[in-house]
Length: 238
Image (cartoon, rainbow, N blue to C red; front, side, top):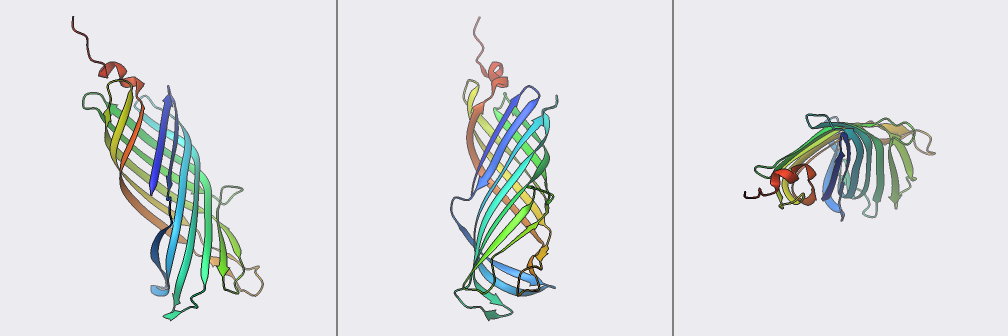
């Protein structure tokens, strides 16, 4: 998984763009529960792209509340199904495309210390996907070697993501390189929805689900730290 972050501030206005991208398909195994019992097992391959763009107001103390847009897109492929202990035909493949768009309400703090060339940052987002207009979560399923028709279901979501990092700055002028250690976490809940208008089926359901994740990474970057120029310029001898 790769990630990127751009933070810019002009006076009291702030802009940020950040995102995550899986450049290749990742793999794992899934277990589906009903009433505490495992009702299905399968292999899972997936890829995720996620991003936030937001505008904020920088307070005199350095905190920046912001409002922005959330976007996420995932691709999932499920194979090797076992339901109630019985393997399904090996040719069954379920291809799933999931995307969501929503609003983000959050706050971040960003500070740098000239004396020890340190940089600190934290952020926290409330993610709201109301299932209104374009702000919705959508899953589209396509089934290979199955009598189940392709389906699309829209739903809503609510979540929180946050994290922070501590790093160091390198360079004598305002242009600096950075290296930092970062930690992030995500909690995202999607409400269950069902379609009852598909011929031959009582209903097709997108079950409610909770996605939880966390990461630790070493980050490399750079920037223009104009506020530190005077503090980091060597003093001239008199």
